[in-house]
Image (cartoon, rainbow, N blue to C red; front, side, top):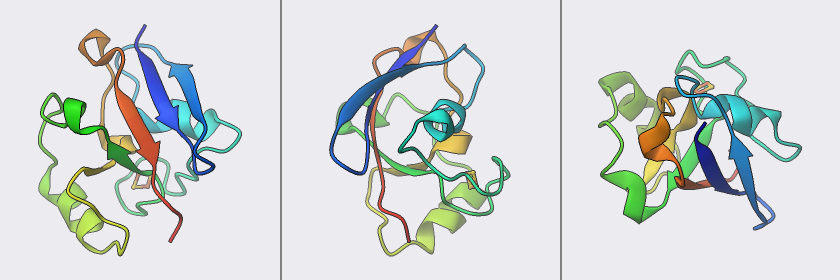
Length: 104
Ligand code: FES
């Protein structure tokens, strides 16, 4: 069961766990100070935006074009931006570190 280290918008680091095959957005949405994920993972709201730790970025599959399009519209976008609803967790991602991006 992958464990993910998450820095929330207050700068507090927490650990969350989720089953393999679950998208990262789901445990982040369940956090008290987590992501809104308004579209429920349909890649159409960008309220699940996170910054992926540089060490982990290359270990993730590249974003699909629709994710890239959504990220491109964000003023808070960085080179390590991803939509957490597009990241499927697996054991290889145990220890993944992300920071929840500011709300827009
Ligand atoms: S939950 Fe809406 S884009 Fe990820």
